Length: 256
Image (tube, rainbow, N blue to C red):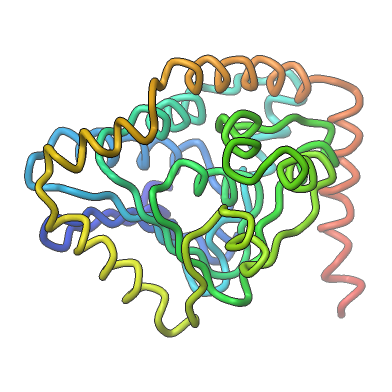
């Protein structure tokens, strides 16, 4: 449902909040679509200077909704919502700041590679279990992570699927700062306010120079997406996803 994404504006700041706490902010197609729309509308509005991504306490995002994954894996229509959002991330014209608390899995990690500043809390763990699920990296992470983290740290994150603590993520360059949970949103919004106060054209030119051409990123997202769709329909991925879902369903029984 689209109310799982809350969009609000505070002055020149647009806040995009993932708000599906009962599912640890697992992202559905409708959620992706609303975030894409928010980025497009914010970029088109001269009153907006910066985009902010937030989650809920304890969960930035647990990744893609597994029900949507299984629809594609069993031969259903994958839709274009995820693709549209990844393209929006790659092409967004205004700075993006994120505040991450707790769970940050899959897109909950790779989204931050596109952000200009990311703050995270000490209890945050960044994890990308793509290969463990028989899949491949997405969101341009196979290109961005080696650039940002270096080849070996990127392989540990994307290939081995190791969890990165907030401190390790900061040391690796994945995030900007570690702040306490109670200070997270205030820190994010303060940074966004500083960005919003800068001369916008000068900041845009500076950001574009730092990011360089988007062509290679767009091309890599397309290449990853082709592999991702193929892998979703593979026997290997179906078996891994089924095992994962079965294990998750059994966990409440084991804990009870």
